[in-house]
Image (tube, rainbow, N blue to C red; front, top):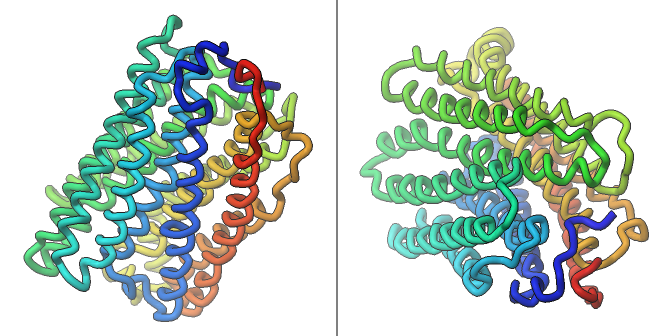
Length: 454
């Protein structure tokens, strides 16, 4: 079936570039195959060689993570918002020239920020251009929000569930960009190691929650509720249920963030707020997704369905691991590794990092790969049933993610697990490269679409 709906020819002309998503998607692929997965694989090999997650400096680790959030996820979100949203709403894109300018702001800002952030360990002066790069990224995200608001404002129909989720996720995207720039600047200005460690312990966890569960997860949940019923014939959730879930998820996210911060500032009693909010987030997410019937019999299927299903399995795994964090920290560690560094600190960086990897690579990246594999041929006017099934990248990325999550968790108990975790990044990188080349080649195929009709 054709998705999203075609626009009228005069509407397409008013949008400017008829396939504006392509430079954003290409930039996203370029980022994930360089600053993203490639850099991440190299960092993991260095960690495995040293046998310690502290073998890599804070700024280099965070520069890689920054590229993944802003470049890999951010650029794909921008491309879909600028191209897919007008098609779904049947209106021209508002401010198309500003939308195009935001690509340059985000691209240049991302490269400058990530590159110079990784280099500040060698010379503190590199922090200045890195901060300027952050300001360019904030400007790009501000343009994104402005263009989306203008596009939705020109629609003749009322806001739908997708719009509510998208606007909320974009709000978190902008908030995290500002907070991330402030946090990064604060780490540059920290007078000593003790102050730097305090900043990291207090603010990095809450920031990651906003980026992953506020921006990425809410965006994917919103898009899923709009596209998956049409793509695969899944159940359409009721508007009341979807909006209730959105309110609950945002309240839970605020509780998680507040609990993490207050635990550091006012005492560990606030862990109760954090854990209760985690349980609410887990329950609301599972209840929302399970009602779609994603894992049951579907009316239509194609090569993307396995990616979408695997993505949501990884989301459930990461949420389950998050809910089980106290059991790991105060149960398994105390029983099997009471003398480990994680047990002494009262916090397992390995386990927490495994959760993050499960949700970012397993859930977010698999959803990007699956939805793009389905929608890009549609956007290009190419029949998807004549394309390859993309089993190899699917198996490689899932295998790499599973090895990484399991072995990284096991490093709390056995040092040899580092040698198992090390190569996992190469599997993910290879899978992403195969998928990226495939998608790039599809975007290079120019098909004339009369009146934009695929």
